[in-house]
Length: 485
Picture 1 (tube, helix red, strand yellow):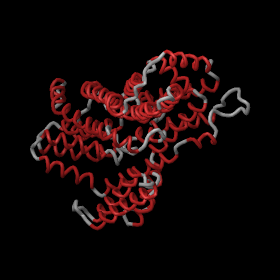
Picture 2 (cartoon, rainbow, N blue to C red):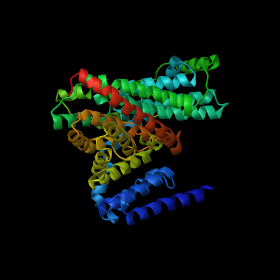
Picture 3 (cartoon, helix red, strand yellow):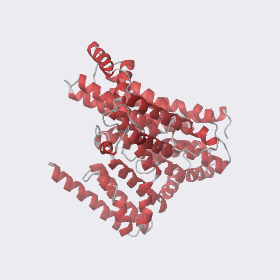
Picture 4 (spheres, rainbow, N blue to C red):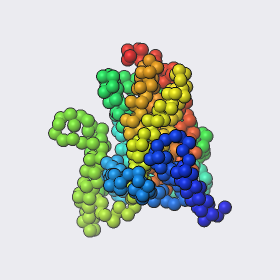
C-alpha cells in the first residue's frame, strides 16, 4: 500500500469514527459528552495513524469544540498556554545550548567510558542514572537533562558501529525509550518524583486528614520502582531491541581519543554547565527555597529562568562576541511538541468537564462489585491507559475522590485503591502525549509512533500486573507495619 492510499484510508477511518460517535451513544452519556467522545476518537485515530502531522491534529480542539458548541474558543485556547508548555520551552532552550557548545558530547563520551561500550551496559547505565534522578526531580526535568546526553551517545555509537545499521537502530530506539520510561518509573519512588504523587498525598490530607510521610512513601513505592526499572531493561535489551553491540578495545580507544580532542572545557561550555547545574539544583531544592518565603519557585519558572539566562550570558571569546544562545539557534527546537501537548491538555479538560472520567469511576465500582482484587486490577489498568490521553496529574485530581468513595463504600483502606490509581497514572508508555517525557523523546526523530505503541503496550501490561500484585500482596503488610489505617 503506497503512502497516499494509506493516508487517505487513515483519514477515512478517523472521519468515519468521528461521524459514527456523533450519531450513536453506546455509553449513554449526555449530548455534550457524546460530542467530546467523537472528537477524542477522531484525534486519537489521527495521532496513531499520523495521517496528518501530530501537531496539526492538536489544533483540532481549537476548531471543533467551538464549532460544535462544546466550548468557546477563549476557553479551549487556555490549555495551549498551560505552564507545562513553557516548561518544555525552557527545557528545550537548555538542550539546544548544551548541544550547540558540544557539552553533551563531552558528558556522553565520559558516561560511555565509565559504563563500558557494550550496548546493553550503556542502556543499563542510563536506566539507573535516569531513574535515580527522577526520584528527586520531576520526570520532565530529568528527561530534559538526560535527553541531549543520550542523543550524543547515540551519535558516538553510530560513528563506531556503522557496519550494522539494524543493531544501531535498535540501540537508538532503546536509548530514547529508556530515558522517557525511566523518568516516569523512577518518579513513583518518592512523593516529589512526579506530580500525581503530590496530588494524591494532598487528597489524602484533605479527605482523611492523613499526612503521608516522605519515608513511608519511599518504603512502600521504591521497591516497586526498582522492579519496574529492571523489567524495562529486560524488555528493551533482551526482548524487543536486541542490539548485540559488544565492547571492544578500538571503541574504548576512540572514545579516549575523542575526549582528548575536545581538550579543556571552553568558556562557553563552562558557562552552559554552570547554568545547567544551577537549574538542576533549583529543581531539586525548590521546595526548601520556597519554605524560606523569599520567592515562589516552580519547575516552569526555573526552566524559563535558565532559558533567559542562556540568551543573556555572553559565550566568551568568540568571533562575533555572541551570547550562549541566539534566536536562530531555536530553529532546531521541536516547536510542534508544544502544540501536541497543548492539544492533549485541551482534549483532557473537556473529557473531565463533561463528566466522562467520573462516569468511568462509577462504572468500575459497579462492575467490580465486592471482588476487591478485580477492583485493584481494573483501577491500575484503567489508570495506565487513561493517562495515555490526558494529564496524569489532572487524572489523579479527578479520580482520587471517586476511588476514595469506592473504598469507603467497600470499607477498604483507601490507600489500597488510591495507590494503584496514582502509580498507574505515571506509567503511560504508549503515546507521546501520555507523559511529558514521552513527548520529549518522540521529538528526537529517532522513534516512530509504532515503536512507542509496541513497547508502551508491553510496559503498560507489565506495569499493570506488577502494580496490582504489589498493591494486593505487599502494600497491606507495609501499611500494617507502619500503622497506616
